[in-house]
Amino acid sequence: MTTPLVSICLPNLNTRPFLQERIDTILAQTCDNWELIVSDNHSDDGAWAFFEDLARRDPRVSIAQAPREGLYPNWNRCIARARGELVYIATSDDTMAPDCLEKLVSALEAHPEADIAHCRLRTIDEHGESLPNE
Image (cartoon, rainbow, N blue to C red):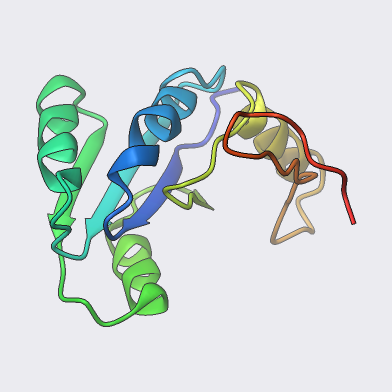
């Protein structure tokens, strides 16, 4: 059976310091049937140039800029451009385990009655060290 296309929606505004690590964790996914939909709110920290370079190198990446109207309108812009059967909202300053999408897709396929899947959150500090869950 073919894995369904996952649309990874990445709204962004001025998070350039976090983007390389974020994108590295997307590119490292064991589930490789995904597209990355970026909606950038005219970042002025170099994020847009980062995304332009990424889109030139990877045809799975679709980028667009949108007015600064807030996080939720930007999420909706990403979702409106998504082509996948499944949608994953990726915040631009987070990371994910290499098997994250694989496990979420597997869980949804095993439970077709479910409309949403989530995973445990691991909070880290600026050095990548785990913080205690509260």
